Image (tube, rainbow, N blue to C red; front, top):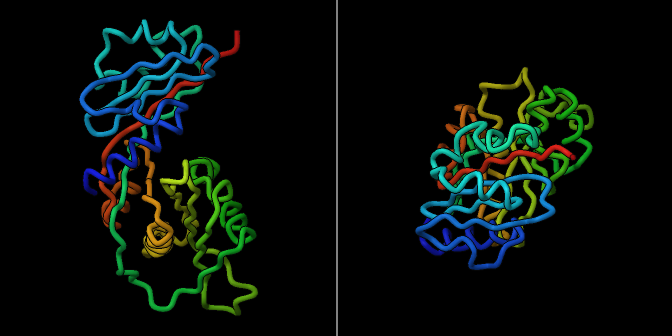
Length: 236
């Protein structure tokens, strides 16, 4: 990752949050009021950060540091009576170069949505929600090769979806019985390389407490460069 990549990531997040293209300038925290916001979002990318939400939330966070706002549950503490489901903190990692190592000879890969759905059906709901495979596109599902292709079962899958035409948000999911074999790394590598070939910067999101996902991202060449946390607001 170089400064050009960083600028593109900041631009993509500015647009994703509905802000001006230059909103995430480096060196300071920027607060942006959305009067009808349904959630409060805090994003930090390098030395730039943004807090987006209703004015009361911006006022309540004025004395809080970026480190405070990035901690789990702090956004919900701004007004517990108005706070709902918290998501994060989520580590944001990015890859700038194509990798070559697959550690799997001639894998049987499916690009069909049906196989991504079958994989989700074999996994725990929390894992499915985190990966969001079937909410993405460009699927790479590794199929078992010990039986005919038409009856093979999905072992692991990765997919990505474009963000603002600039980033490729990547998700990875492995069937419980197929873990610790490197299958997730195979499909994640394929999805990452494909995104870069398409002119996008791959983005990897993982919970700060998910050491397995963060280590996998590191092995694939992703650089941790930010974090995001949000809290949904309860309806009046």
